[in-house]
Length: 260
Image 1 (spheres, rainbow, N blue to C red):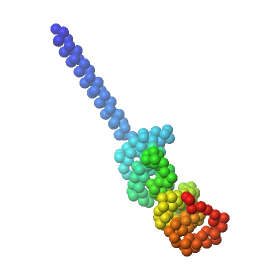
Image 2 (tube, rainbow, N blue to C red):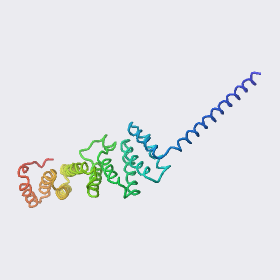
Image 3 (cartoon, helix red, strand yellow):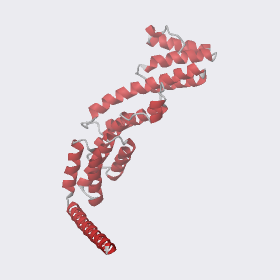
Image 4 (cartoon, rainbow, N blue to C red):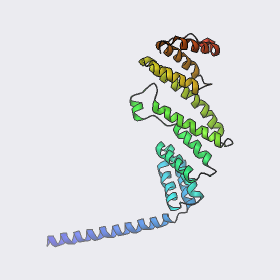
């Protein structure tokens, strides 16, 4: 008798569970049906609302849903840009860059291309170092130099193609900063080679800096390294010629040590 009671209870539990699942499925379908009827404009507004709250993950979901459901039109174009910015703020720089590149391929004549270039520069400009860089800090980073160069080219491209853009003034300031920063990085690398005894590499790096970073403070250090490297390579004539250039242009910078 007890066995039959247990079977009855089990049967009732299964029935209730099935009813609950059916009810849940109906609710999910109803919710999906409602969501599928949300317009592109509404999805864009919802994504922007989430982004303004700092919930970039939810914002990305809204923007990408918009792109998937409404792939054509102004809202999809705008959603792609907003998605790139959200990825940038969500600390996903590679995805942000991929999204921006896709935007410029799909909408090369868009009125927002200047913003896409500016944002691309910002992503590279503010990009943090890798985990290895944080665990094993270095005096310079080749990877960091690559990012700086990419940011420099992005901002430079914006200034060349869209000189009247509202983003141009800030881009110009960043170009100036990056030019100085890149020059300083090159000099640091040249000094590193000097410390390692790689005098030819130091000489070549200093010469490259002099050629490619005219007008920046890095020129002084580059000339000094070139002089020291030339002396170490027994190229006294070259060292003397470079010293004359240093004296002519920077007479107060001729008293320096080759111990870098």
